[in-house]
Image (cartoon, rainbow, N blue to C red; front, side):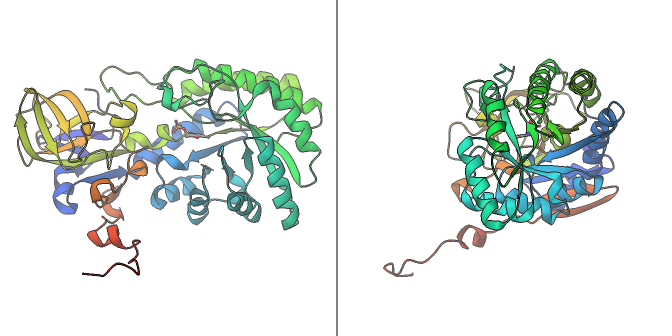
Length: 432
Ligand SMILES: *Cc1c(COP(=O)(O)O)cnc(C)c1O
């Protein structure tokens, strides 16, 4: 297996730089999410360098839904990132992390009246997903006596090679407005009293392992940008969304680097805007490719069961990492306490949840698995903890952040009282 450069094996233990994963599991308990701040910063710099070296006026909006821990948002804020926020909660977190309202974009296909009011109040640009939403936003801004900056979310009707649950730019997806209806939408926006059309937005999907679909999406966006500029829209930004994949199959996959992404997209962008005579800022919204590989999920083996297959029963399940169950996703598994040893036994890594589908990994070779081993699931920093739940009444696990040689909790583990603290005693039930 080819490990990312911040992961190494030292004295048979898996380490993130100098940090021993077995020691961290002992210190903080398992299950445990461990995130490397230095890796997030490195990933951000790759993007920043790749884009700014090809076009100076860019903005990186981190897709906050990938990992919404405030500590992660603060790291990215301090590096200069804005954020793609998809809910009022994400908007509040991004502001709390120190991001400026103008560096956010409020995305989403189904925003509530309070969502729209919050965006207007804070001055956060909105990616508008329907004409109904446009007019609601216009009204909300009118009541507040403000103007709302918007982009329309374009559905470019592109078939993108990824899992169907994360392809968002198909003609049949719930997201965006069909590309052929976009110029009419901008005309309607120009006629609104409290709307300022400022940008244009798309996002074609997630975990995309080829740069070609991004270049095609950019072509569509540039074509529309030229068209709407002609009808009087002054475009401040063109936002191409996120979606660059990562090599979850560490031995087989090859994911494009941010430099390869930029090399495919920026020339298309530049050529298009030069032809149209416009100078918008180029925005991108990476989520997974900024944070996924920064994080491992550590889980302890409770028991081994030799049945029709060898089950390695661990203490983390789809309550903490739902990607295998939801997307048939693959995460590499390393026995952190025997990391230097060859795999001997074909294992199925199973979680503790009362569901047949609670399998984290199928058919992996692990070295002589036994109770007490610490397994590390790699590449869990995106859509990992962020999609966790308390299903089966399991308190969520803690999250630790590493920076240099320091390690600290960025989220404490939940306790049993965290399970009950929002529950109410009904007046007609006697308390025992
Ligand atoms: C999810 C999402 C992203 C980020 O996608 P990744 O695959 O994590 O890079 C960006 N923009 C929008 C609108 C999204 O919904």
